[in-house]
Amino acid sequence: MKYLLSIVLLAFIGLSTPRKTTPASYDWGEVPVQPNLSWAQQVGALKTPATTQLNAVHFGLQNDTSVLNTYPIQLAIDSCNRMGGGTVVIPAGTYHIGALFIKSGVNLHLSKGTTLVASEAISDYPEFPSRIAGIEMVWPSAVLNILDAENAAITGEGVIDCRGKVFWDKYWKMREDYEKRNLRWIVDYDCKRVRGILVSNSKHITLKDFTLMRTGFWACQILYSDQCSVNGVTINNNIGGHGPSTDGIDIDSSTNILIENCEVDCNDDNICIKAGRDADGLRVNRPTENVVVRNCTARKGAGLITCGSETSGSIRNVLAYDLKASGTGSVLRLKSSMNRGGTIENIYITRVEADSVSNVLGVDLNWHPKYSYSELPAEYKGKEIPAHWKVMLTPVEPKEKGYPYFRNVYFSHVKAERAKRFIAASGWNDTLRIENFYISNVNAQVKSAGKIVYGKNFQLSDIRLEVEDKSRVKQEHNVDSKIEISYQ
Picture 1 (cartoon, rainbow, N blue to C red):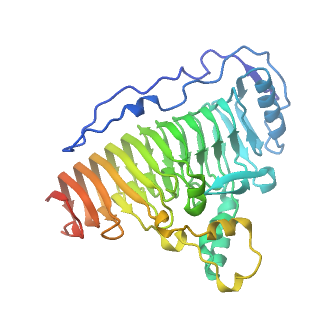
Picture 2: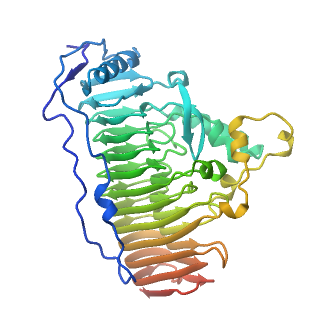
Picture 3: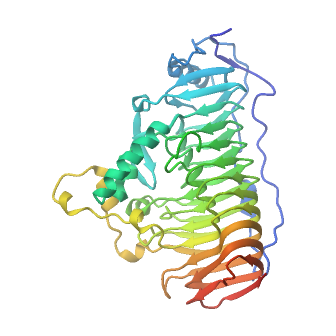
């Protein structure tokens, strides 16, 4: 039937039984102590929505893009939740929607041939307190939201078309105006844009097999959550324009996360690990830890795996392996600033194939100062300003609390072709260094070698570089380091 939305039991449409990751062996080169990665066996959703049989229910869903179908789909989700959970199946067709909220015990299944077309009207996305780009503030809901839920899912081979260009255009127009007024630091927060998927304060959440495209802001944010899996998701935010800050997958102050078999093409960080920004992030003080990324591909973007720049709550225990990068910024990128605070530590990246990336490894304690530091222009002083401006302007005191620390990074078995640079790694000074980097078994074809500045215990072994401009890795102010590179 044309107008049908069913809640059904389908033996093979449901989610597979969750399983723990199996122990694996990794080669990190010559390291003083082999890392303990036992935590990696417990990541991901450990349970999934029930497939209890439910009678088919008609809710008035219409395969007609001139009709807004938010209400009938939400009614089905709410009914399924009240009945104890199950699978809400969206049949093949094209459906115009606003914000949807998936509840505990519910799997929203997008059948093959299904396209959810998101509304371009900001009024279809009710606002609520959230965290965006590292600070807590009121923000529009995402297209699909899983809030304060347990054991919920979004699955299926369907497509979620967020039609975000209207928000991209809004941002670029505001950005031009804000930069003229020395307000670059706040434009990202003043320009409210719609995320693709938000998982917040939830546990045992599964996102599987669908395609997410053209998101107005971040594609998929997992915030303040635990035991979540993202499997087989395709993200394409480079359709029909240049989407600013369209990160692919953002893991934000969350724990025990598994990301696998995903493909991300975006205009910012492809897979990004975050933990809050500046004074507000230090106030919340929630880390991201225990994250496994495997069998994923990054295309356009700012980095295959990025940690930061929101580091305030600390980031630790990230294992990524069997990855591909094509045309993105860095294979591994660590970034923060001198007012973020927090520590990035215990990062393990291995078995990566890269082509046409900007950096094989990028490390910067003081990233993007024009964006990272907030200063109120003189003409606004003494005037009433928005609450989130005040949050951004709150100083970190004492200032030493804002210093970030990077340490214990293992980076091995990387093959890169046509890269712009091998390494760009910088600490701050001789008292704030980037420490304990173990880099081994890298074969890279690069235009330029790069540099390492203010490092401590940088250990590079079995590194083979083919450098187009014949440069060598510059070493400045490093201590206790051993750098062995074969140049070709």
